[in-house]
Length: 302
Image (tube, rainbow, N blue to C red):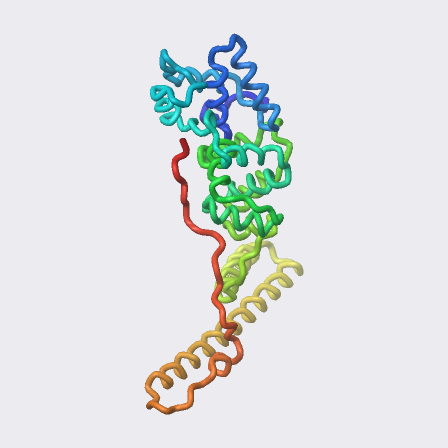
């Protein structure tokens, strides 16, 4: 059954901190668990597994003098900050903007897909979101959305696989993005979202293609002999030879450039400077590639 727990996997929800906030907001209502579950479902989230919401409540040590409506009550504020939900109880404009994204289907879907790519910091996600669908969202808002509403880092790969396998998750987009990032790398996952690197490293592409062709050739070699095998081996071998020629030509061109640079460094003063376009055979563009992706930048949200 899709809603049965896996005994070997601890279930977690991407909106765990938001659910914790709802538990703490409805804590004194008789039907608090039903109210939390209904509000989660109303925002197009997957319904948590039975016992998950109650488990969050059981782990909370709510103070006896708990007063979540009072922003001046120090004991309550310290408790909410420790549970990393304080800013939802006393929201600023960024928190309101982050929650508003839940009602923007196109932006929400793209941003959640981006957040599945594990080296997306807040600035990178903002840039790639704009490149993908033209939406402008501030990094501070993305940080809050990521923490409360789609905290992909709470889940391991196994937990993600289980989370996305449930019947209440009909959209395969997230599963496809995650699988692409895991197997083919983050640039390939971004490509699926319509975000392209400014410039591909042609040498790296050739090396990757060469390795793939070689290993494919090895697999084909052990297949039973027939006409299709001979044809495939011929095509793969020709591809390997072509790539080897291209890489050798590139190495020779680079060696020639280095020799000319060395001559330039040793040339006496007054020597006419060689134009960079001439020196590189017209390959100089005057710019360097910029990376859109960068490292992690996850701050704790209260």
